[in-house]
Length: 211
Ligand code: CDP
Image (cartoon, rainbow, N blue to C red):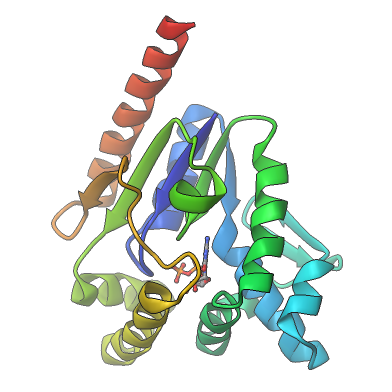
């Protein structure tokens, strides 16, 4: 079973996807961490991101991200790597490598997978697709609060990244036509988790009823 949670930066995908995975007993896949790891590795090695992506040695262990066995969980979250991740993510060769890796992971077991293209490209057959969004100002406010950063700076960086993610030629950020779009601008965290968990249970019930 795959539950896909897509949406722009700061919409709450990670915290919602994690909480949902915990509640359902599913495994959580943070696809953004993979693009971030490619960006970090390419920068450190001064290598072509596509070459790095083709042989990325990444381990996703709960909240921990290991690159070649080294913990990079914090390093991949810097504003520089956020921008670099959205740049490497526009490269179709990088995307092809990441999508193949993600599909292999999702092929067995039960997953809550989070990103930009899970419902559209990686797992179009997902049992439930949620597109989480919120106003740009609210998304920047949440991200700034998380990071202890200035909301204005975060908004400026977020706008650049949103624009790049929305307008790239390959797998741009978009809601799958059969996704449930949830605007969380006015909703608290618990409320969003409650609604998404309810949708998931409905779909899973429908599924077991059909077989
Ligand atoms: O957490 P946040 O939304 O800020 O970023 P992320 O999910 O960690 O993703 C970082 C960058 O990776 C995004 O800006 C996208 O350009 C890219 N990405 C992607 O292209 N496809 C995905 N499935 C996940 C991330």
